[in-house]
Amino acid sequence: MTTADMSALDAGGSRRSAVDAERSRLWGRGSVVTAELTAEETGGAVGITRFQAVHGERGPRHIHSVEDEIFLVGSGELTVTVGDRVHEVSGSGTLFLPRGIPHSYEVVSADARFHVITTPGGFERFFLAAGYPLDLGADAPVGARWSVDRTHDFAERLGLGLTWCG
Image (cartoon, rainbow, N blue to C red):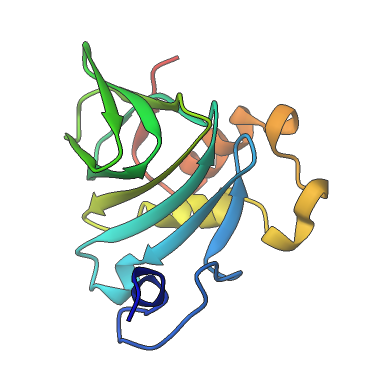
């Protein structure tokens, strides 16, 4: 079984497509975000979100009060700021982002593939709720039409305990 085949298995070992339309959303500057494993599937223990991100994709500075995050970068390069420390994380890089510490990220390479693991799980629902269905394609308001205010509203409505730092 290839790596691509393995990534197409769900938590129960059942096959699903590499980009599952129900689990994937258009995001930010035109990236695709996929909920690989949800809190519902893990009894709340963990959530795993896969990013197929374009240059300039970013998460503005914010603080999580509920979950810790782990970034696993498969390809490309991200600049991740945690507190006052700046990290350049590239292919095969891993970085832990503890709850309660302000952090942000930006894709600085042409594109990047990475996973974000949150524990406890549940944060992945933010991407599913605030992102846009893949079938909108070029009609989705991503890129220059993306609304950061909209993502703030969704985070608040979902009760995620995020604090935006500017």
